[in-house]
Image (cartoon, rainbow, N blue to C red; front, side, top):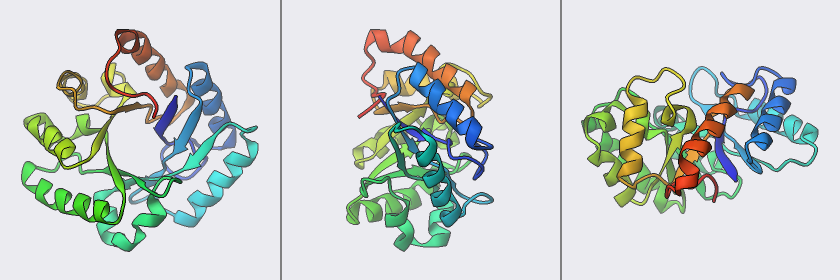
Length: 220
């Protein structure tokens, strides 16, 4: 299983604080059956520092004892607009075609016209867009059809395991996540882990949903 969203890089955002914690996150991930991780630090203020994040990835990879790690980013839409779309190829996953896009949590539905425009531009650049944690977006909570519109536009949607099992405090996210699963629009469930303990949510989620065979992919 591949975890496609994890804040595992040491000392670069609100995730792992240091190398030791990152290595403990790898151990925790392995214990729940994860076999590879995409490292996705925040590409948003106040954290984004491309060179520092790349350096942190190389340090973690060097100490990971061969555990498969690849580099990516969780790219906030507003930050992408600030940087410019020319940055997009540098922010893809290592496969150079997958782009993890974070929308604004509080945006209203009328902003989605701008989001769709960006998505189409990214697709025109040859990128496949995955939308990070749609269960947290107020507009989707208000109108679940927006999630289907994202799928119809060629995106895949990624839930975060803590929201699915009601772990961290995200208002109504658990309920929205379950509606999205029931609507059959979810392609991935990722850890969105920020510390080793977050992988316990992943364990709980597997125990609850995976035996019943949800269509959501833990890995691709």
